[in-house]
Length: 69
Image (cartoon, rainbow, N blue to C red; front, side):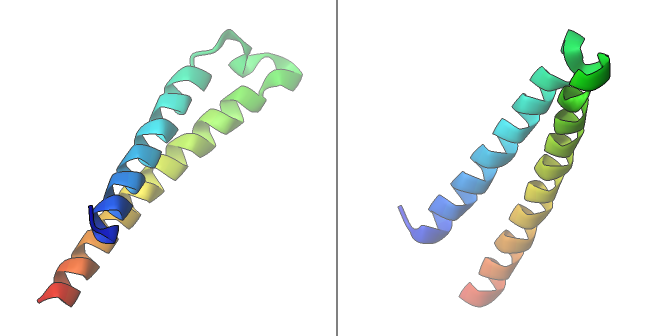
């Protein structure tokens, strides 16, 4: 497996895990419970991170195609 392929795999895995964590944290009954609202905050940050990783993945893919040409 090339380094480029591993990088794309790792970014895909990381974004999937970020969305899975958000899916776990946001509907948690503790997500809106006063001082434990950190679940909600971490869920939202995880969603933002997942979207950012997808954007980065597409940017990396495009850059690698341009360098290979």
